[in-house]
Image (cartoon, rainbow over all chains, first blue to last red; front, side):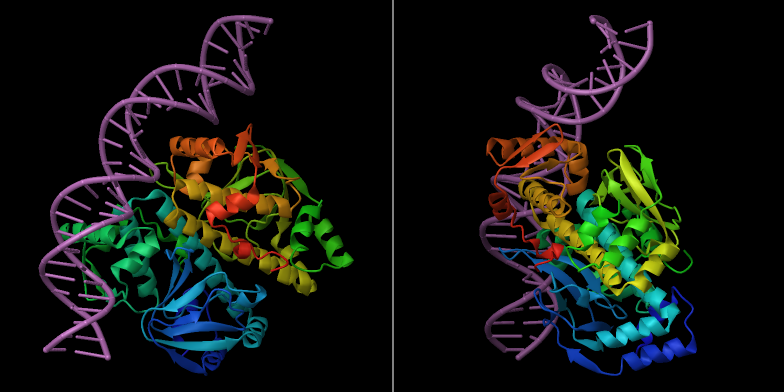
Length: 237
Length: 237
DNA sequence: CGTAATCTTGAGTCCAATCAACCAATGTGG
DNA sequence: CCACATTGGTTGATTGGACTCAAGATTACG
């Protein structure tokens, strides 16, 4: 179903029934990608745009010595760069965190879509700009906040994003990340992530067991994190 | 002159004489912005796209307690987000570092430009995607590298970017940044930036005096930084 | 059910922050 | 034209947050 994408985009623009049909049609050809696989590898020249329908992915870059920085998470409804084919080669990789269902959209289909529907064109642009805004906020996170506030901020963002696509029923949702992956996201070691989570648990802020994250009081966590959702550019502004 | 923009874009796409004319025309109405001013402030609803013709600008976000993270530098030829008007409000600010000359491009002109010239459309897209790629690399920098390698990496990037728009004649170029601003860029304190620069100076890597940066051996600095220019997606790939 | 991956905790170390002067350069007004 | 103020740069001493190393507990999974 293109429903995940439609649901996400309709948070920004009013989509017509025709637009919905277009999106559904776009997602006709899907395939499965098992956890641990790479969807795209640095150096590739992708000619398709991928849409994540189920599961989680993540963008990352590797340094020569093996260190890894995760630069984005992809959750259902997320596209990997609509215009990626403009660049000659990928400058980063996209990995899959848990068994995923993916639609491959030929670039021609994307171009056609954007030409035919001004609403979708704008909506896809909006999604792209929000991705960039998230990247800026992650840079703020890594550059300015200490471990405790970094984790808090990331969890707030995840909560909002999961809510948005209907994957967080209530205060609890699935986060298929190891502590090592959390560390590589925020520039922390897994050991320090562990200690930070322990602290947040002991303060009654969260429960994180078996990849299930529960935020006991989102408002309070947002306050701690200094979380301002404006950068996600949600519907109601 | 739109020449700065044209020079930058022609590093990616072959622009026709007509395209050059279009760009020149676009930059007809210019104005000056003094150092220290904000070009755009968080919360604004810009209806113009700004093109920096002379001087330096920087994107930044402030936290409640006054800390600042610089998330990008704008040098001559850089546009501030072509499609910014799709978002309702700015989620960050753009400041001016040294007296600048700026062209304000009405969004209609941008849209028209992109419709009329496929080459320019692609080129502007390319510029946008490169901006995002730089952001990813900055996140890697802040998340994974220590102060010494962070500074080295940033200087390598600046060198390449300045070279690209013809603002670095040889190994030396103008960098109108205080050590505090360098710190806010990389998530370091000014004191530590100072010590790091001192070390790089003592190792004979750089000279930095009066806002003039000279990199004595770019190849060596790139090696130290682990700098791979692929993310800048230059012409020759 | 056993092995590997992940999580957890402790002890010691180190990189970068903080605190605090002092110096150099620039600029302004009397 | 000089006194003084301000900003930016430099250096030292100390502190602290996060890393490293290491070992044990728990969980996941073939």
